[in-house]
Length: 174
Ligand SMILES: [Cu+2]
Image (cartoon, rainbow, N blue to C red):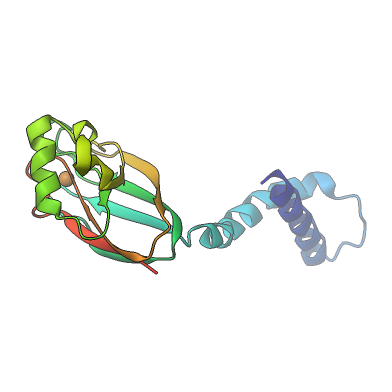
């Protein structure tokens, strides 16, 4: 990242000199001012390549995910849940639980309530849970990295009590 900044600083300096029609090479101090804009413009392009196996999901106060079907390449997948609502955390929080292919969301949604949280599910059922994020309260976002190395269709859902029926979807791993 440091290297990139210096690289962009270099471009900024070059642009400054070129625009000014200034052939002197002693404008380093002034070029620092132009560096900020150059860095900000270039940032999204740098992020895109890193986002290939990243899923960002939004959950709202209407108990909805903004998207329910995803396709990713086999491997590590980073999932972020953003709670865009404003209701208190005790009333409306969201997480993302990913289950192994063939798992039934309803079974896990109900079990999570029964035992007091997805992290308390034990035994055989635990083996079918690939992973989960923390609960995100209003305005919060939580991320976790999931190992989805086997191709298949992975169900996901929100384990907040009462949410699984409305908040579920699938991740297709190719
Ligand atoms: Cu939820």
